Amino acid sequence: MMANHKRKLVYGVGVNDAPYHDKNCPFLIVWRAMLRRCYSTETNRYQGVYVADEWLTFMNFRSWMETKDWKGNYLDKDLKVYNSDRYSPETCMFIPGWLNSTFKRSPIVGPYLLGTGLRPSGKWAATGFNCFHVGMFESEIDAHHAAVEDRMKDLLIKAESIVDYEIKSAIINRAELIRSIIKSGGIIERI
Image 1 (cartoon, rainbow, N blue to C red):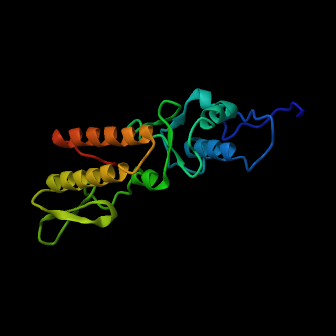
Image 2 (tube, rainbow, N blue to C red):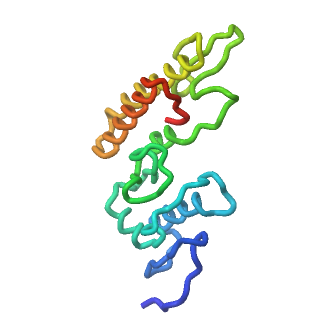
Image 3 (tube, helix red, strand yellow):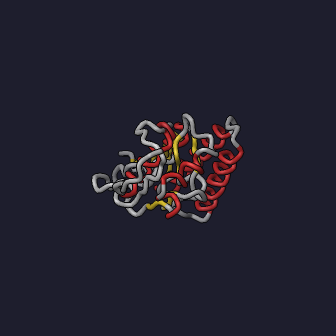
């Protein structure tokens, strides 16, 4: 039986209520990384993002994670809910690394829209994933829409190989949402 003693809060908010001490516990590693992204004073990468109250307690998070296919996958808060600002059972899932990197926030490269670049000719180039050339366009918005549509096609092709129904459905829903934004003339800041 473990001695009952007061533990320090993890990143000022998390309660590690595990009945054991194992710094190599995979559940604890993922939980701490999630808290670090949101609450560490050393990183501001996830400013404005928070963890649901129930997950501030480690064993609650662990109970959820144990029911998921987490081995070799990454905790993601954005695929189920577009631009989610919350880690919670309703917004999170574990996804493959290649898919996780697809949804990372793109660094802003110049003043241009996602997937576009202005060429010396004055035309706008559209690029898909891995800088694949999609085409040349008269306007930045047309190049942007073509680039994003090409990325959606690529993502849907990759989704065909995914067995997990929840992940596959989330990808299809994301593609439909982004296509509807494009159809209405909107701008996509991230896939």
